Amino acid sequence: MEADRFSTAARLKAIGQEAQARVYRAATRRPVRRNKLTGRAALLALVLCALVVALAYPTRQYIAQRSDIADQRRAAQRAKEKVEQLREEKARWEDPDYVRAQARQRLHYVVPGETGYQLTGPLPTATPGSAADPATADRAAGEAAANRPWYDNLWDGVDQADAAATTSRH
Image (tube, rainbow, N blue to C red):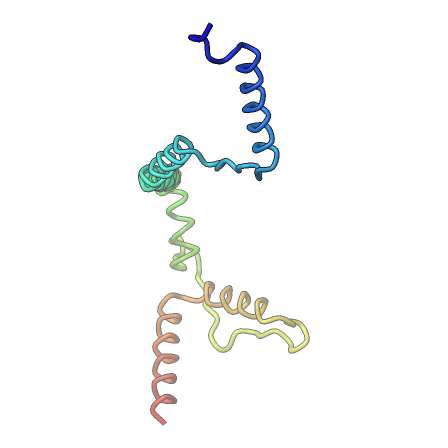
């Protein structure tokens, strides 16, 4: 029995003491804080950041192009509406009655056999209390100018420009 230096009881006692010492050391030691950010998590975060950076510019360009496409579609729709409006106006101008009515209204033409009258002198103006706001006065002046012949409006424009140039020089 000499070969078996330690008995089983002695070995078990030694193992028990070692285990007890480990438990004691573990209890007295401060708990080790594990880093919440592991290497894998850091790599995943880095890959996600790289993807965001890599996709930000193309995404921005895509959104800008979609906006441009929408703007171009709206412009095309407005152009189609304008073309349709011009076609309708062209069709009206092909009607001889409409042309006669426009000539009478805009150019003050008269039909052969009619007598045309044109008033000379100042146009009647509104009384001071009747036109309270400037918009009404401007509208009345615009209507008065529309009822005068075009050459009178042209000459008045030349006179106003000359008066403005004369006052600015003095």
